[in-house]
Length: 329
Ligand SMILES: Cc1cc2nc3c(=O)[nH]c(=O)nc-3n(C[C@H](O)[C@H](O)[C@H](O)COP(=O)(O)O)c2cc1C
Image 1 (spheres, rainbow, N blue to C red):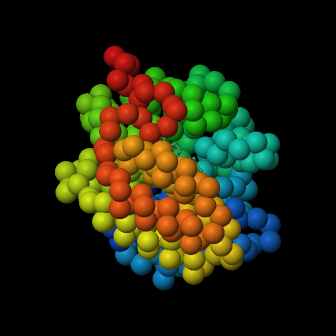
Image 2 (cartoon, helix red, strand yellow):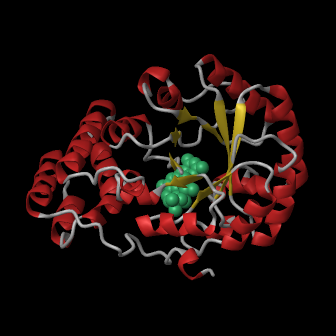
Image 3 (cartoon, protein in one colour):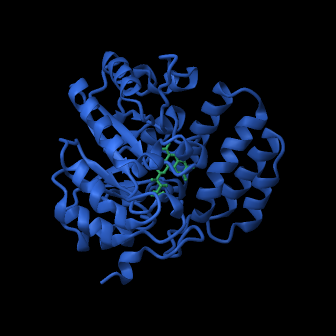
């Protein structure tokens, strides 16, 4: 099984990827959060920094593009090719209202003819390998069959399926019947993404879909940065490893971000996911959430690491449904 780290806007930027890769080196591919090539034919400074090869040394990175304009995609493809990238990912999954209303991300799925014409243009316009990360529709999972027919016309590097529709956002149950359909009918290799939070979720997926050879994990890896090491039989990491990961990330944000508030925001967002790794730690986590200065933040984190232990519980880390495959068959 190959394991990919999902792109997560605002979280999995290059500082995060580097810190993660330093201490948890068994991810097969990282994806950048989406880059939005626009009419000005320029990446934003933040985007540019995220894809610079020197900021991603030793990491297999696939840049992700969010656009519905073939000329913008092809401009970005050229630029990425010049930087040495050989694969690009197209985002057909972003559910945010502002993106969808412009017909991008999951919004593009509602215009199958336009999408097909766009794919025709980009596949004939670049030699780079192209993968797609998609939801299964905008409104209903019934839309997926038609989309799959379209994807089958093109030689994708892989089709990464997050089997929710746009309206489901990230909480509603995933539509495993769409994954089944993808596995049966796709001419392209399938990578599964969605709600893999624990080792047993990954095992369950493997048991039911033995032909799937790649999975992409997002929130599961934020909640347990060593989940892939554990699932692929590597040594279980120690509290010290997690501490080192945290410290490297914290240092990175301190040196790159403007203002303590931005650093605190980023670190608190991380703890929203990571907190569940420590048993009996509600009080410590509250102290982290309440910290308004870097010094009080550091003190709260120190207490947590010194007094609490890691627990790889079978409980789900967030308020979301059980992984549906456990009851699918
Ligand atoms: C905060 C956040 C940011 C995200 N940003 C992106 C993004 O930039 N590109 C993308 O394709 N998906 C993005 N996603 C979706 C994830 O890549 C992934 O598909 C989703 O979280 C489901 O996988 P999971 O259940 O393993 O987390 C984002 C999700 C979250 C929660």
